[in-house]
Image (cartoon, rainbow, N blue to C red; front, side):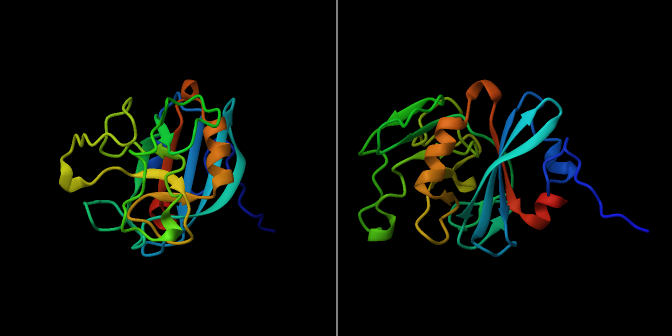
Length: 202
């Protein structure tokens, strides 16, 4: 009689060797973003923490990624989120620090959405966590330094969800953002593992 395959507790579900090996050995927190498919803006966001050799899911939320889906070769304006493993080192937003241990930069002007964005987007940047794609960790999320050049895009954040796809960021609810901000600990070297489910498994 065959038995159902078991999940290895020392691995993050749905993440194959290629990306799992990119998670730093000293990382104890992973935010995994599971995109529904390559061209979908719908995703599921799960926070995992490591306890000894085992990874445990702490919380899960619905979310959105780039409105055109995912890419392994992100460029400015493609409206796809980059696939990969990225640090989560800096936070900020329009609102005051909700109690995070990450470096937090409050600035109503720097995080104000563009004037031509609709009402649904007016609170997108109330809280943000910078995703360390083509940026300098240790700087405020709004810093425009792009080590790989402007064509590779940047300014990719975890921020408040507005109900559909983003330019390349990942959106979750305000409650989820507050939970993540209060839970992520720089001493545990948090990272984000993100991509469509097929790429994550590869």
